[in-house]
Length: 81
Image (tube, rainbow, N blue to C red):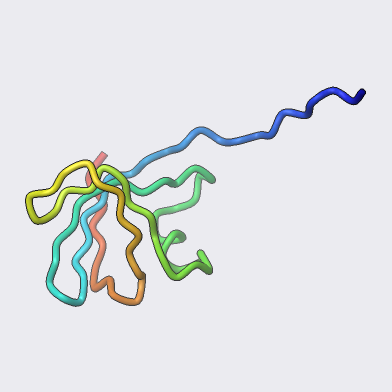
């Protein structure tokens, strides 16, 4: 019997951002930059149409997870480190 191979999973590296959507919502939450990519790469180089935000705060809700279509994002502001 072969030994079980461990799968490498990088530790998540979360970055807090605020986004403004085309319908006027302002949403704050965290995105995962686990591959040590730049925040801008998540929006420009990533081929998926959606970003996943966790610990989201908007419209009085807190701690939610949202999938946001990148076509509806007007601007993104990273939180200062």
